[in-house]
Amino acid sequence: MEPSIGPAARPTQRTACVRCDGPLAAGDRYTCRPCVEAAYQACREITDRHVLASDILAVRRRTG
Ligand SMILES: [Zn+2]
Image 1 (cartoon, rainbow, N blue to C red):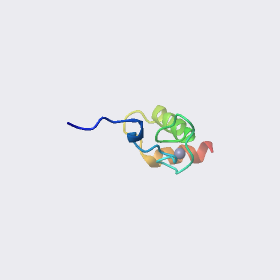
Image 2: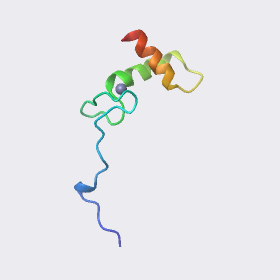
Image 3: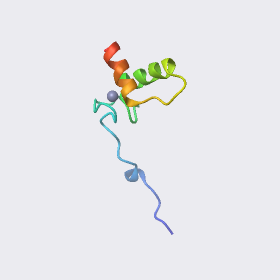
Image 4: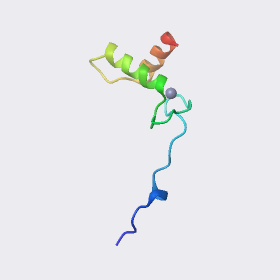
């Protein structure tokens, strides 16, 4: 029988964005808000293929 998983067994909470290592706001699990918005914008502009990290960087460079 496996031990029950208590609150202490939660997965480690991320504190840095996986894309830019920026700080995560409350509720952000993997990427920071600017990266999420850049990803959404890239998705709207590029609809026929997967969004690449370079696409997001390009959008961030343009908007930031
Ligand atoms: Zn980020």
